[in-house]
Length: 154
Image (cartoon, rainbow, N blue to C red; front, side, top):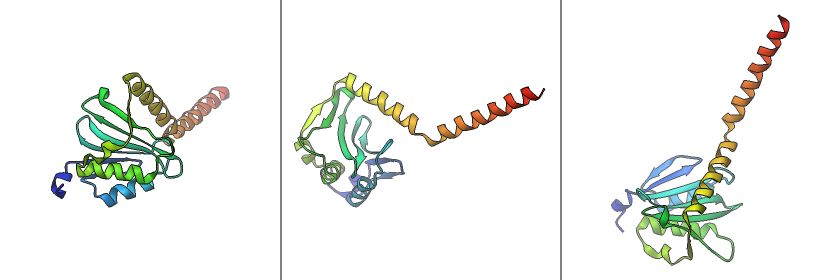
């Protein structure tokens, strides 16, 4: 696939930046540097509702999924062992190259209820992990203590 056609792909990294038309080397670097925990993922988008995503880290292991057309076309990679960084990187590189070799991996279609359940769990985990939420709770607690202290003085 010519490099110019690859420019239509967009790689969103969390935490991190996004890359337009990522190279094989950039994909490799992004996957190997995912920190793990929540959130820790990379989504390679071809066009609306067409993407491949990986979540996890080298230390924790990975999940790999793709979607085509709609949530009804959402699939997850299945393996009898651990999903290696090499497999994740190779699948994303093939996807970015427009090479259908990634389809030869083992996939299982996810039903809509599984996707919604995962999305809700991921959203809850993400909200719980937000550092600024802790900051605001601490700030609110401090402000409440000040208000209570002032009311006791009067």
